[in-house]
Length: 355
Image (cartoon, rainbow, N blue to C red):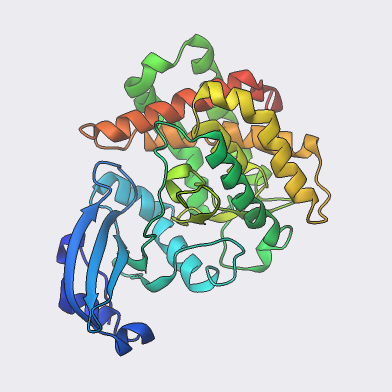
């Protein structure tokens, strides 16, 4: 029997007790009270979220993070088209227990193949925090994020395709990116044209023309696990900023090493800070890779990061064309993504890799 629901608003204590009925710790110490607090409103993400504040028979209070499909029809279609819901459920069922980085404990996860609805009940990271991506992360947060990224990148270095359910860029549904970049380019320019001078418009046009090459480039040769949405709002830090937990594995895939680092540095911090710490941060990541006995060069990292930087224009182009125009936070987020990505393309002359 499916436990998926239409909305966070359908969560009741009876539903929660039944959904968690096969989880040992909730059998032994049952939930007797529930308060549902919707969180993350206005963020425009690919889901609806809630904090479930529960009281147990022992008097213990346990907070649970709940996630279901987004109520935004356009974003829901994007999530379904690219199998984001299915990918995250597969991650928590098959990889979360063995990956060498902290992730929330999954209590219950389900993807309904018929309705494509999804529900995830996860450990709530009490006492941890995640930075505001629009405001931008600090250098210390970026340093810790890189330390967490290294084991993600290295654990399945060169072996990720042995896990046959992990997708790559040549999946039929990922090839849709090529068509979507063409389709949504005009709407992106309509919404964010004020950020795009003539040079940036020319660069975007060249990237869109080149986009059919990316699936092959990112799916052959050296591949590893990529989170693919490794941004600071998907990272929970301790108050001391000495550890982190990685959430939101909807976009995970087999990919070239360098995507996650490029995304972290070029979309998550203010432009001036990125320029200040970029070289140091790349060296920190490369040294971490090499310390695992892996041969990986500065030239390889630069090439993969620059190609990734060009390809991730899909985030502001496609995502920025689909959010609800009344959602001011989404407006600011995609504005920041576009400005930071295109400024990095200029700063590092990334276009030379497709010229």
